[in-house]
Image (cartoon, rainbow, N blue to C red):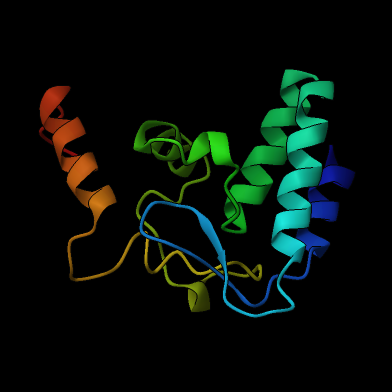
Length: 130
């Protein structure tokens, strides 16, 4: 599984961003590596045992890459962000690994659609300390 993590960490991340809903957006014409990685992983995921699939999805999420089934709604995205300790996101300059910016998904000092979902989720599930 360490080799899988190394492979994900060697993916060149550049020219991409995450929108307010967690979707990967290529911001540079040469950033089609994102669609290729997402396509490759989406095709390989059904062939992986659940343990390996989880490692792969977590490593990609740490780099700011979420697969379409995780961005279909905020609940899977919430789970993935929590599993990878990114729910309370730190700016890229504070992290060690090159990653796609989550600033649009989780902006500081301004509300975003994900924030509204998270607050409502906490209220619905009676989580007053979150």
